[in-house]
Structures are given as C-alpha cells and as structure tokens.
Image 1: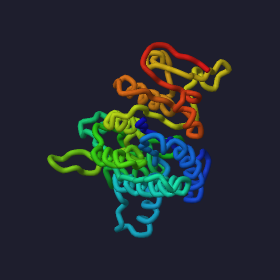
Image 2: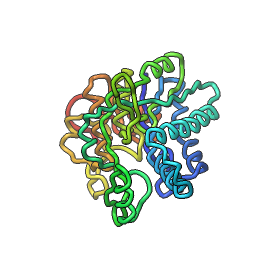
Image 3: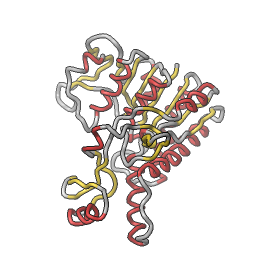
Image 4: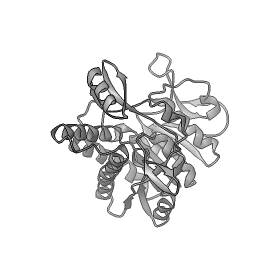
Length: 309
C-alpha cells in the first residue's frame, strides 16, 4: 500500500519542551520506531511540520541582525528549506539506526502557490518572536512586514495560501518506485510561485496537512494518515465525548471542529477521501501499525454516518 504520513508537531517537540537538538532527537527516535515498523511492508512518504523550527531560526536571525545590522534576515522560504534538511536528516538517520535495511531519502521539496490566492490579502499566520507594540510599529514603518496583536505582545503575520502543485512530484515517484522511504514536503514544502517561466520563493506558510493531502492525491496514495495526539472525538473534552472509529465526510460535516487544531486536519482527510483515491485516517503516531488495520484512530472513508468505539 502507498501511504502518505503527515507528522504533527508532537512528533518533533512535545508541548512545553525546549526546542533543543537533544529534545528533538529524542522525539524523532520514537517517531522513527513507529514508522519503521510498517516501512518494509508499504511505500511510505513522510511529511513533517516545521513551525517551531522556523520560529527559532527567525529569532536567531533577528538576534544576529541586532549585532550586525547590515546582515539582513534570510527569507522564510530559505528558512523553510533549512528545516527540511535538519528534520529530514534526523528522521532518515534514526530510521536507518532502527533498520539498516531501509533505504531512506530526504528531498527538499517546493510547493507552488498562486499569487492570486486571497490569503495574500489577509495575512493571519503568526510566525517568529514576540515584540512590544512600539517595536512592532517601528519594524512595520521600516519594512513591508505586518504585525498583529497576539495576546499582550505583537508577532509578525504572513499569508497561508492553498498549495496548488508539488514541484518535485516526479522525483518523489522515482524514489518510491526504487524502494525508498521518502521524506518530502517538510513544513508543507518550500513555498514558491511562478513569475513567468521562473519559480521564486514566497514569504508565507503552507499548511502541512493540506500539502500532505495534495501530495497523496498527486502520487495516487492508497491511504493518507495525519498523525497527531489521537483520534477524532465527538464533543472532545466534555463528559459525553466519544471516540470515532469510522467516519465519513458526510458524517463529519455535522460537527464544528476547532479551526486552530482538529478543523484543518478533518478538512484535509475529507478532501482526500472525496477525491476518490483512497481512505484517510487520523490517530496517534504511537499507534500507527494499528491505525492501518483500523484497530486505533479514526478511519475516514466514503459513505454516510459515524461509528464509535
């Protein structure tokens, strides 16, 4: 079976953990163990997040510019490509440490977006360090950056457009067809757009799960899995919460899931199922082998209604 796995942020950094190489490595070792357990029986593409990692690089850029004002910060597309290499390196190394017979390749992948996407007219995605209102206004006066209030501080906001194409789709296919576990589209892919016959980097953030869905469609995956904290629940956190075993896009349409957490994930899996290419699932990274057999997590398939555990 050809499977696209979208790794949530908890696979790289647990809530409350400091963003150190040691902590990231420790979490990646656990993630690699789950993925390696299924990698010999299936064709696997791994898409991972990079939000905290890009944020850290942005802070380091900002701190260095204070020391050296003539050193302008690197743009977000370049920082995104850096994190693809960093996280991909750790993942491929730990996968091989678990099973030296696995062939693993990390591919820095460009994801194309449209300049006409309405997201560019209304940047909403917070990135980078926090600033006082005074300092944020100073930066806005000196540059084209946009800042908005995030609690009592201000942070930069950038657009989050829809992904439209995976530039290196053929390379991903070639690597899969020659027996590789492929790590691709890290952080949603390096954002680029077309200027005539050229591709150029864009200052934006692409949702990892939406890129994972697009990739799953593009390479005709049989299964698209978003690995996060757990299954989809009805009334999560309330006394009558119930864990979904099997759900359909039609059944899920009757619920409102939080926009900042489960909402985009549900949208992504439903989009893949509605494409008619295969099924999708949402569940815990550490139950991956059981998600594939529908013994854990929530399977999303065509049809009507919802089945609970």
